[in-house]
Amino acid sequence: MTEKQENATDRKRQPLLVLIGPTAVGKTALSLTLAQQWNAEIISGDSMQVYRGMDIGTAKLPLAERGGIPHHLIDICDPEEPYSAADFQAGARTAIEHISSRGKLPFIVGGTGLYIESLCYNYQFADNGSDEAFRAEQEAYATEYGFDALHAKLKEIDPEAAERLHPNDLRRVIRALEVHHLTGQTFSEQQAGQKKESPYELCIIGLSIDRATLYRRIEARIDEMLEQGLVDEVKDILGRELPPHAVPMQALGYKEIADYLQGNCSYEAAVERLKRDTRRFAKRQLSWFRHMKDIHWFDAGENFHNNLSAIHAIIAGKFQDHLEYHTNQSF
Image (tube, rainbow, N blue to C red; front, side, top):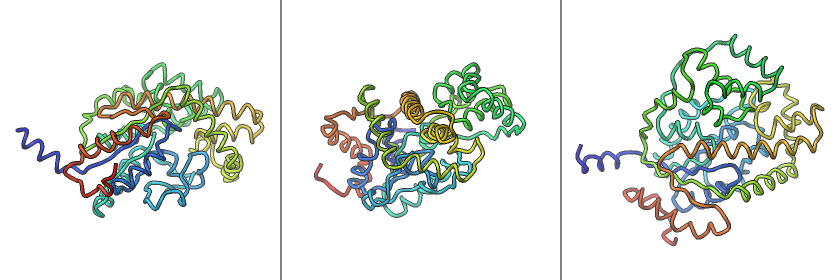
């Protein structure tokens, strides 16, 4: 294929703007700025914001603070319902088509690496089947010995997947173990076999920050969540009498507070563990994104405003054939 033909092919690809980074790094504020600037609609790339009633603990942006910008794949499931990367991929594809049909720019914003990467690079999710007895056995093991013990089992057979998955993410840890159990191939090996060719014309912006500052932001966010009523939100979810393996019972921020409410630890211990686990989660997010390609990284520190012009220039350069998206030339 000639260079001219390749360029023509690229122009036919649907533009897709993506913003990634660890929790508390500042994605939400920047996403609103970019969405307004580029006539975009936002698609959440967060695996927990799909659930209704899980608002404070997922840092879900209230409707009144979205600046009139449509947000997709938020509040589409009840906590009892399972939701997978394949579900996200299908839902996001549909949202992208609808947004594009309105002449708007589709804009993925989030921190769930598997979800975002599976969409950006068109992962093919193999139907490896399931083994319900095996899943029940792993759930029983986690209940008796703890989530960390089950996570250690995954670390033995698939260290790369274990690095990327939090021990509290029981459903995905069990699924990674199940894939190996059924196929003899690790989850990481299956991912490595993906072609990672995007059907979209991608522009991926990544935010990072020095670890000390990120950790301060994480702790401040958790303190704010507690002030906003995180404990009552978890209490309401516990009132639904969900099974232990349901998503809210595993989710970061919910499991720790649930342990306090169920009398398994003190409030102070629960908050300290939540802050510790969130710091570890942020490290896993960054580890995942560091394995991705095509990312334009920016430091989200105090002088971040100096980077805005560079970010807009990158987007303009990538989508130069689609400048109808651009609504404000004054950057």
